[in-house]
Length: 223
Image 1 (cartoon, rainbow, N blue to C red):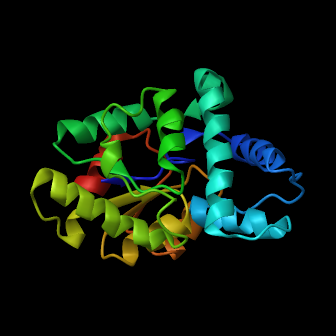
Image 2: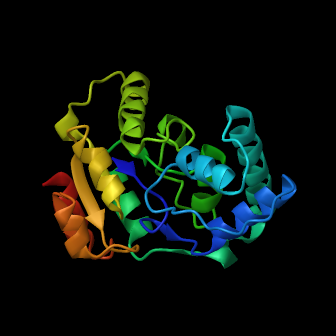
Image 3: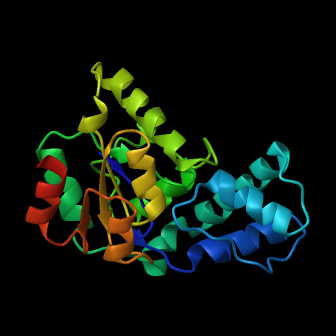
């Protein structure tokens, strides 16, 4: 199972923009235009932020921006629980899937270092194998993250995962597309900025209003 983070497991509305403003400020530039975060990877978002603010999106500049973002997240780690909330049913869903023996990790636009902070604030990292995730530092193209995570899981567990055995859970059409492009099962939750109708139109195999109904989560994931 490949979980998205923001608006799927947790809600940190406004935090991303605040962190980008601080990170960009550390590079001597004031944030004046907010990027589109919805289901995009940090590599894509960072490149947009840099070019929009008159900076070259070189690998050096992208990595400097990431370094500043990680520093902001590290500093905020002790108060993350005050800046956001765990979404209804998230903890129970993760625990239930672990009880079914599912290999659970992330496919997220976030950087790995920031992912840990966002999840650990609410104890949501317990059942996730974070070292085999597909993170937003890997590619600007979200579908690329899925095979990376699947290959890492296969290597760790010594087993092959057929595309149909892989479930991607997220809240945006980009999450759905990442699943479909790799032959995986797309489970969408309408807990973000996209409606159930929009997620269904994107091709999700199942759309849930949220993760609160554990029986519905089980059926969507396990059949």
